[in-house]
Amino acid sequence: MSSPRRDAPDAEGLTSSAELRARLGALQAAPGNGSEDAHEPPAEDGEVLAKIPRRGGESLHVVLHTYRGKRFVRFQVWREDKAGKWWPMRGVGFALRSGETADVAAAMVEAAERSAGRK
Image (cartoon, rainbow, N blue to C red; front, side, top):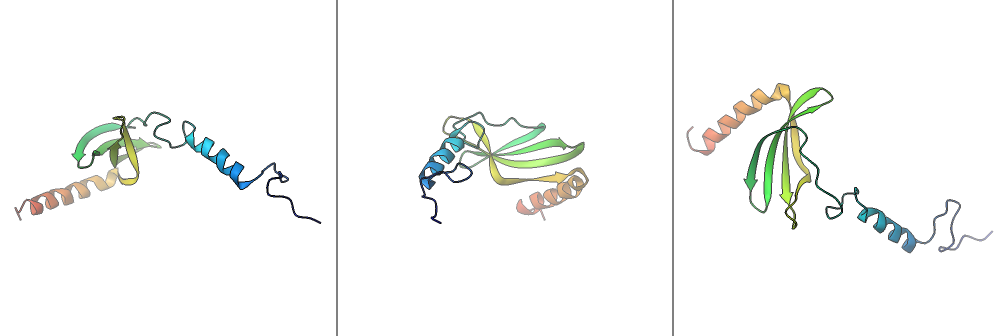
C-alpha cells in the first residue's frame, strides 16, 4: 500500500501544505478575523468613566460594564493605529467585580498619596 502524495487530496479533501498556508492566509485577511485593517474597531461596551492618555499612542479606558447581569469595572489599554482608529490591546486589561471596587479604590487613594509623598 503506497502512501498518498503530498499534493494529492487526502480523505478530507486537504492537499499540500503550501495550499493550506495560502488558504489560511486568505482566511486571516478576511474581515472579522482579527485583522485591524480588515474591519472597524469594536465599540466600547458599557459606560466609559475615564480615558487616561498614556505614552506611545495608548490610552487606559475605565469602563463600567455589565456581563450576564453582573456589574464590573473594566480597565483596558487601547492603542491608536496608523489610520487613527483605536483598538483594545489583547491581554492588557482586567476587570474588577463590583464587590471589589471599594477596597481597590481605597488602595488606589493610598497609592496616590504615597507616590505624591504625602505619607
